[in-house]
Amino acid sequence: MKKSRVLLTSCGGPLSWAFQKDFQQRSDCQIFFGDANPQAPAKNWVKDFLPLLPAMDQDYGEHLLGLARHHDIDLIIPGADEEALALMSEQKRFKEAGIMLAVQDDSILSYFRSKSRMYDHLKSKGFPVPAYRTFTTPGELEAALKEFDYPRRPLLVKPNSGRGGRGIAIVAERIVPSKDDLHQFNRSLLEQWIDGKTEFLLMEYLAGDIFDIDVLTYAQGSVFFGMRRRLTNVTKLFSGNLFELNEQIDALAKSLYKIFPTRFLIDYDVMWTTDGKAVLLEVNPRPSGSTISYLPFGINLYYVLLKSYLCGEHQIPHNHFQGKKASVTFGIVAGENG
Image 1 (cartoon, rainbow, N blue to C red):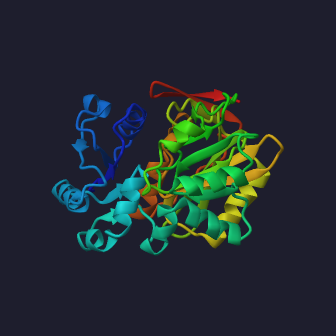
Image 2 (tube, one colour):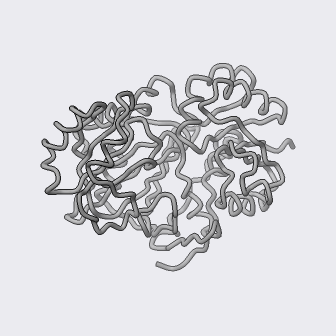
């Protein structure tokens, strides 16, 4: 019986070690790990490591298609926004080559390319999103700061087309105590970001806990929602999650899926504010890198995904991980009782 051959992209960092160990226990598939950094750490411990072109390269699609054909890949799961977005418009020719891309339909590509367009769409449907204003020029920034009553309260700034939670900074004249470990800038430093071309979002700063909602749509149509509260809100130094059910966030996620249905595996980011409100921060076009948190409990969402789409086996995870904590240190994940 032929093994399913799957490529995980943007998977060259320390978290790939735990996924490699998990997949070594599964005899019915062969996993390739790819990354744009040819010297990525994963190269040292992954048997099937593939250097990739950056997603912004004009030859990215052709390059990836050639690699996939050469290695007889059945399914590609992109791990970064840029890769997922680049591949959304490439699905036809990959499909013709017998290769499945775990990406969204290109009819909703514009929502993922622009955070403000996504926010406007979701707000029009009644979903709670942060208050924000866009700016490109110094004059637009001045108007936005005035509207948000700056500097009486801190704000957030991030690129309108940025990747997930990357590129976010706090804007304040004084240091703001924060569990987010974000860069902090005053107004004069913020003005240096402006180049007249890049559009930014200026947003209200919300304090609270961030939840990751894993949304896995199976090939036969059923949907798994997994909920994880981050131990810290930091993206770049992920330390783990607590599998904690918040009924308001769960209801929000399921309502969101009804009006914005997706395919394969993606991630919502939701803030549970200190005053007990759920606010939708991001709808990401790819899986969360922190799905590593499921591994100590025998669940590999990438494996669940490939079994559904390549083998017709829909292994819906049981909720025995609820109330459990997964901590991650230097790419090593461990499960603990909550």
